[in-house]
Length: 99
Image (tube, rainbow, N blue to C red):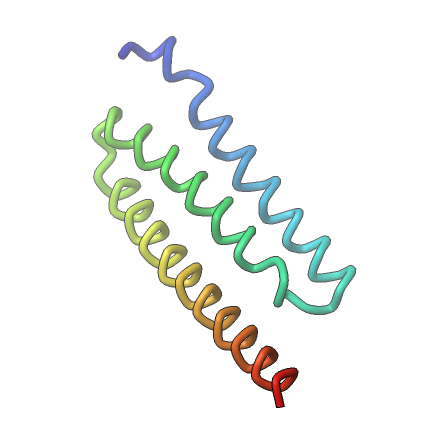
């Protein structure tokens, strides 16, 4: 791929990242809680970081490659933790209704 084909990729990645962060801040402000929306934020962050990773691999920018990989790993762990907590919450709620 040449530079012309990759020209818009960093702008798309940055736009997704910024949009995700603003969405998260708006929801946090509106609801005063991140419980229902943290998973969405983490997913958007993983998508943005994946685009940055691809772009930096093509550009051979090792510091940014490492940064993107770490951000993807941390966001993935966060997603797993959020999903686990939601499952535990749903199980506990279901048990309360059964008794």
